[in-house]
Length: 232
Image (cartoon, rainbow, N blue to C red; front, side, top):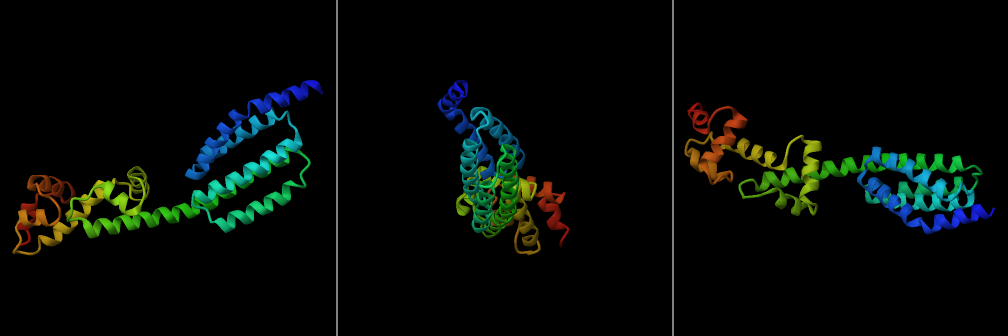
């Protein structure tokens, strides 16, 4: 009994290490990183069991506490708040009846999977909406000297986050998409005989004609001049 008490005191003194693991796990939830979240949860629960010496009462308190924190992180990650709160309420009812440590651990693992599923589903919709808004902004402003930072600022997100979204949803960079929009617009303007290549280049945001020719050829396969001459 004395050894058990000493171990529990040691666990309390080392609670900072547990909280560090917990913060890392909650970050995974917010980011919707399912693989890392599940791996880190297993590590966290093992650590919890060791540090509480398998004390059921202490584990119940920590698991309920963890579930509350996970629910908030899931909402921050994009999950529907009402759905999350309903799942958390049901979870709290269930764990009050548990008698085995394994039941607590299995149920919190199930809850995390449910939260992540809800979070990823909502996040996918949110991400797609952001990408569509970015595309719309680029189309409307392509003649201006816009950069990824300008598009990100318009959406109130970081440039790095916007870059990841474009790679994920469109498999291209933001700059690639801006260039693609400009070149496609150039193709349309080329059909107007009163506009020469230099005028088209400036109209779509390229001040350097050779730079324009380089990207036009990359996307269309021929130089702007060759393409224009083929039209008339």
